[in-house]
Image 1 (tube, one colour):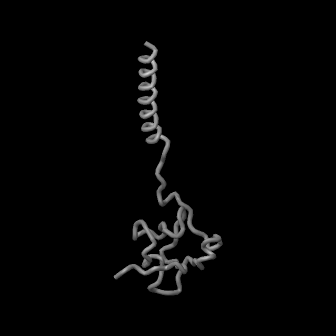
Image 2 (tube, helix red, strand yellow; image 1 turned 90 degrees about the vertical axis):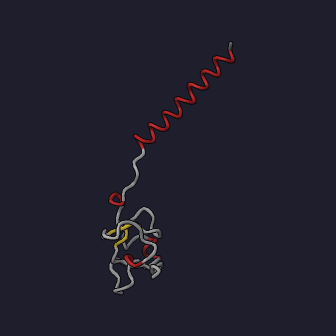
Image 3 (cartoon, helix red, strand yellow; image 1 turned 30 degrees about the vertical axis):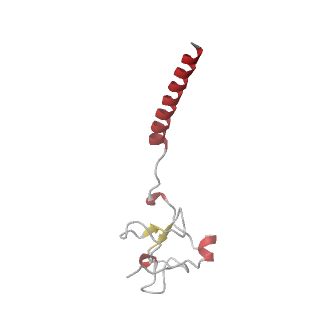
Length: 102
């Protein structure tokens, strides 16, 4: 009889844990939105290392034309693969610039 109660308890705890993880994940985890991310500062250590500027002096070489930038093309500030967790100015530039393929 002891085996049955421990199996029953195990199943209850397992099902309860799965339900708890599923519901908790939906309620507690909020996906990050690009609007929630901070703008990259030119004073940031990584930005300095890559010579990031908010406005490129080149008309055709800027973050909007780089293959590393992500997000909505109409947005002024967008996420970049080089600077995770921060937004870069679409008119900006850094030494990691890689032109989009034609």
